[in-house]
Length: 131
View 1 (cartoon, rainbow, N blue to C red):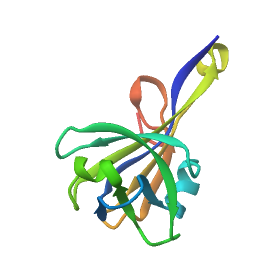
View 2: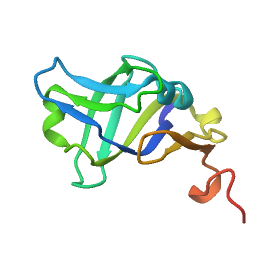
View 3: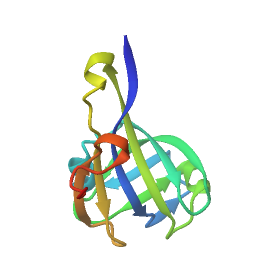
């Protein structure tokens, strides 16, 4: 049996663009994709911290180092430029391996530059937090 677990997330990224007249998806700076382990065309869930919207789409790679976080197509209606979003990816993991699984967490600054990469430990604490 498998269970769906959080694989990784990009925490509180800033939306840089919202392009309604586009096929669809979310464009993410490729540096953030690499750091989080999120792959191009992977399904992700997005939570908008500013308005509470939660929705799913797929990822396309943006220029590495650009800081781009652009919601495209219908998803563009769910956000505003400047909103903070949490981008989450999930994986199907065997039940026994899930007990030891630690999701990767990528923190960014207001320009979507990586400030910290860590993982979750017990009780929602981050790996690099002091007790």
